[in-house]
Amino acid sequence: MELIWLLLLSPVILFALKLIKMIDGRRHQHCYLLSYKLFKAPEDRHLSQETCGRIILRNRNLRLEEYKFLLRAMVGSGMGQCTSGPPIVLSGNEDCPRLGDVLAEMEEIMFSTLDQLLESSGFRPEDIDILVVNVTSFTSLPSLSARIVNRFRMRDDIKVYNLTGMGCSANLIAIDMVHKLFKTHKKALAAVVGTEAIGQNWYCGRDRSMMMTNCLFRSGGCSMLLTNDTSLKSRAILKLDMAVRTHIGANDEAYNCCIQVEDDMGCRGFRLSKSLPRAGGKALVENFKVLLPKILPVKELVRYVSVLLLRKKVNSRLVRGMDTKPNLKAAINHFCIHTGGRAVIDEIGKSLGLKETDVEPSRVTLHRFGNTSCASVWYILGYMEAKKRLKRGDKVLMIGLGSGFKCATAVWEVLKDLEDRNVWDSCVDAYPERMSTDSIAGNDYRINGRPLDSLTQEDVEELRSCAKLVVETF
Image 1 (cartoon, rainbow, N blue to C red):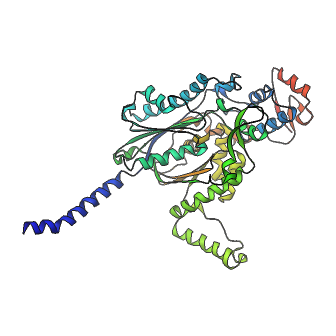
Image 2: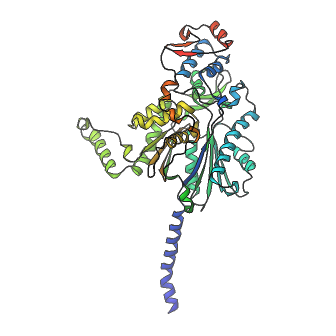
Image 3: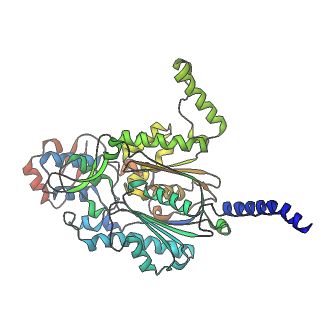
């Protein structure tokens, strides 16, 4: 009789054990952000209009027309006077960067942000179970992640990952990777470190399609702590709802729109083609095909699908005056749009039907810190936190676009009211008004009183020796 009961109860017991295991596993599949720290360069590394002008003028590979092109691009980039450049460029060594200088640039950003992160959170280096480092355009031997392990004396059994070549979407890709790793690592603590090697990749040639990176990319970086330990939820500031990644690299046009190459003179740099906006738009559309059905309320989904069917299958005139785009504001409160440039922010904001107040944090971040590659979305989040806009229950959408071509998005839930002024402390009160007073706007550019259009090669040689450069518009 006991044997019969045992045989009858065995399936029930096995089912109960599997159910308990499944519930316990789901408890550890959450991804909480405990803290993040941003890099802020010293003031003596600010790239003012005058400093940028001098860097451009000392490049003797440029011809007169390239000087004019770069100077116009510089003052029309949407960036202010306080973005930061790497020591390699500021010291005039951008044409022959030494390995030691590149490593020093990387280590300063990685080590300082991690030091701040550990100090503020109270965790020790040996508490970290997973380390992910992402730097797109620089690799070393040993790896950058190994340098962190050595510097902080981390555990022998730490799981280490070193990501390269992921572009400006690298940080969100790293977070998605950690989220997946959490499914097999219970009560784990993960550190994600992201930055970019600006000094090594400063372009010194005269190919216009490769010059724009010098006008947009600036020094920056971020380190963050993530966990799936529910006992630490009370300390967390954000919870990851979902992360979506799309890769359209099978398309040749998208693959080649942002690529590292050497020009005819042998100068290495990143070529940005005219098809970049089209590739970015396509990658974003493919990403949103997966993301939107997961985040939009049913009512908004029904409305959008109905309008779409009426426009395509019945008669487009029936939807005149209706909103033919999905209303993201029905699910998202704040937007962190990658600061790839003023045109990128404009185009994404327009395509998503966002208001100026929605894209303001991205514009402000571009103005103050420039394009800090994968870390840019965290500088945007820092701005909103410093402005005390992030309230408990709010949803934040991060959008990253990277070479390859990739689009990565992440939706976060704010777990508590946030008001840390972080790296924005000294200037946040001046924004957004500062964008209109600290930028140069206009069409008639002048350098030291001389109209840009009428500059000659002799004028350029004379400007090189001037004690002061003044860029103005009228």
